[in-house]
Image (cartoon, rainbow, N blue to C red; front, side):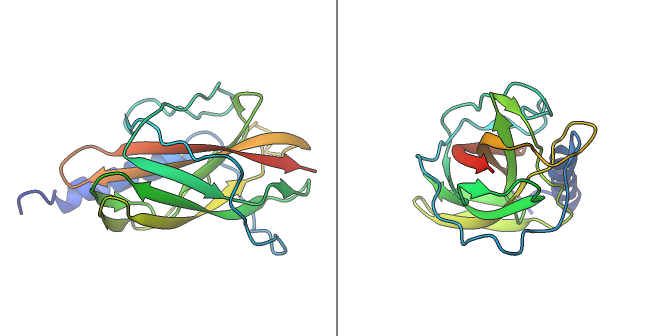
Length: 193
C-alpha cells in the first residue's frame, strides 16, 4: 500500500529504536514501590530538532550532552524532583504535544536518562515491545510512561551517587513516509538524596 511502508521496514525501524535504547550500558532494576505521585517537573519542556535515529547516539555513557533545539514535538516531563540514594528507577510521565500533524510508530515508553555536570550519567532502559501507532492532530497530547534509570552507566553499574541531576527524555517517531526521527525534552531537575 502506498504511504504505509512495508512490515519489514517498520520492523527494522523498531529494531533500530530498541538497539539505540540499549546502546551503552543500560541500567535495570525494579520500579520504586513507594515513590510519590509525579508532579510536573519545574521548568519548561524543550522541543528539539529532529535528528535521524540512524545518526550517532547523542547520549552515550559519559559523553557531553547538548540536545538540539526546535522540532514538531514539545516534550514535558512529570517526575518527582527528589529520590533516595539506592533506588534503582524512578517512574514518571512524558507528555508529547504535537505542533503539527504527526503520523507514525512510537515505542510505548519514552526513553529517559540522567545528565550530571553536562555528561550522561545513565542511559535509557532497553525496551522490548511493539510500537504504537500515532496519528496526532496539531495540538494533540500523548502521554507516555517513562522510567528514569538510577543506576550508573559506568562499568561497575552502581546506583548513582547523591547529588543534583537533570532528567531528559527522548521520543523516536518512525513516520509512514521516512526514516525514524528523534525528539528530546528536558532538562528537569532531580535531586538524589
